[in-house]
Length: 324
Image (cartoon, rainbow, N blue to C red; front, top):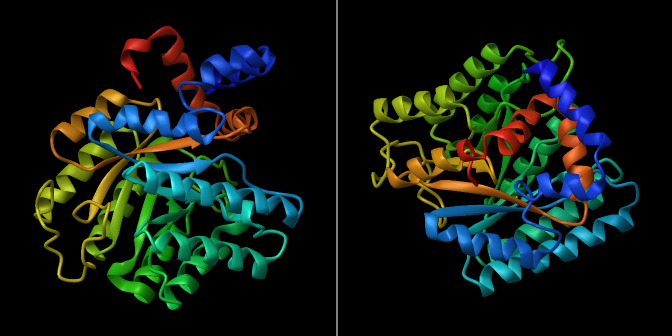
């Protein structure tokens, strides 16, 4: 798929913007918040919950951060007004992390306080290796301040992830709340795994590790071997749908969360698998990105990982295999 993926990236970049929009429409909820609300309302009938992400990340000036501060306030208001089962996903660099850490901390703390008033969880998305440690540090600092409605994403392709899991769980115990994924950023082999199977093996190992440490685990993968491993791991630990989390060292159940775990998938990808999991009683969450920066988001995802183009190929030529 590597060669085909690279070909699809090149082909997509040559397409007129309106043609790219036709493809991106499947994976991006729309240009504005009203589009995202409509998508969530429609998909709520399938038993899904949601994570809302305002598209955009690294900024060049602190003034740009104000857009994200204001927009996420609007998202919070909309979630409450429409009674949506949703939480937030933010990129720390969009709040100024690479420009002024102190200001970024203040911006994120303000958002967390607002979200906590409505018992809404906030996920710090994980970006490239430049901000891995600083993103983790934000989570730990906020927990020290009593703002426990925040967790981070960890990427299994990074060699440091096993140690990061141990370190975070050692510091905040069962309050640790992870989204674990393979990772879209293609990092250098000195710091990251590069082969598909070794990354999947690492992801499976990290899922088991997190479950054993009492953490809340959001399994963000469309890979059937990962999903099968997770279901087996849950059964081994007597965890599963409609079963109270039996782990002694886990934190009490949080509003809007599953019994110690949930499955998470991207909008537009393997809806059939997600619906099957939901039918079996598992909590399933859909990642809902929206915003005017949909084109930059789409191109960046393709640049960072050409294999993402597999989903483009399937949506165009085999749409029945990949229903939203």
